Image (cartoon, rainbow, N blue to C red; front, side, top):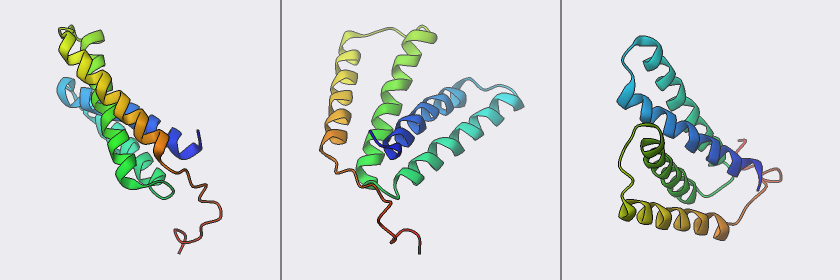
Length: 116
């Protein structure tokens, strides 16, 4: 896995954090952390988009963020673990993994088109 895919996965982690923050923030410090998580998640996605297909990045980013948010709700906020919900999250993750596997990874180091 190259560094651009790592940016996508870390960005998706921060997406989970800011989505949880939107629901549970109740003071200025929590809202500030939520804003920072939003910035980090989208910054990493944009940086990865310089070397990977943006459509695939966005699908993986949102799929991982959705899955992570649902799992965090179940694990940390006592949301019921509906078997059908878990089945669909599993299908979503299969799709995300499939997209990553079929996407050509370009190193970007030989490509000067993004640097102007």
